Image 1 (cartoon, rainbow, N blue to C red):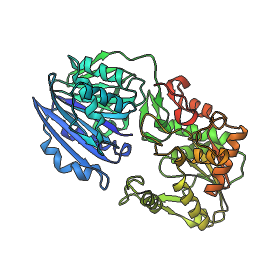
Image 2: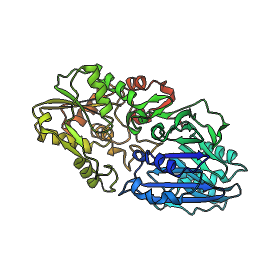
Image 3: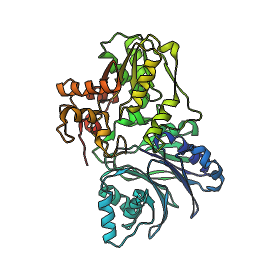
Image 4: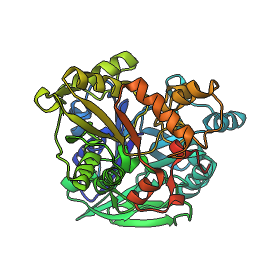
Length: 467
């Protein structure tokens, strides 16, 4: 997914920028970057994070990133920030999201004799494309609006100039931007959790399609928010750090509510409730509190030397790293009937390995409860649950086994309780060797988040989307 952080201060901001960006490390795995400006001089640093932590790569760069304004990014895709020389002046830009019409916009640029210098895995760098769209107009305000209007999918951005930082949320608000304030400084972040230990308090939640100019003196609304919003529901289910709030709604509290909703539908008799570390823990606590069952930790996650499980490029290595990080406790597992809560099932390979370990350690029954509905549509907007083949999704693979064709009507499969939905779940149970499996009902998830459904993106589950 990715995340960014920006700071405008009356004093040097390099340490705030370093730590604020570091607090977003859970949002991306590939690249990290920082840029600052001191008067009219820009400084930049970019590092590969695929085999190291953000802090270890950037700590030696802090003193060289002089300036009282800066932006930082954690990315799953391209190298950022991009620094541009243009008729608007010199500026740096970072982006978060997924541009689904990237090729069409690139062809349009080529037709105007515009070329691209940066690449991302041999392809057009989407952040450079955004910079080009900004530079097509006569002001930063008009340029950002041009980018917001032309881009399909999603793209939120921070633009660092020598007079301030523009924070622009994508047209339908799929990714959040939160403004923080403290004495003599303002900040913008993808996650409010980056603020607390840096002394910032949440000042403002930027709305969809809204543009804010941030300076050391304050914030100014350049463009008001739009009426339509499709904020990603997975922020509360999985992506978001437990401390963070989006649209004023705290992630951890939503996860408690998700778990409680699952517990109210529970029919199995079990001995304990557990969560798959880390993002399943909040859901499991909510389940245990509602059901009055004991919450225990049959798995403990070992993190000091293991990077995130999906960092290696090879799937076999990703699966190995995922297994090695979780250490089982035989004394809690042996002879027990266990309900496990998790945020989601994407491909199911890691869950299958986890289940096998439980049986090896003597579990009597393994029941899986998932905090969201079954994923049957790849994400079109934020690089989550994306794959070269939709059949990599556990739900779609089960549907293919039932239907015998890849392209079929998925409406009934998305409907909890339907005959086709039950058949899909049965296939997944067999493949993952579970005693039982239950997904969250979409209406229960929407209620747990607390926003109207038409304000939430639920495309991964029911295929609904607004481009």
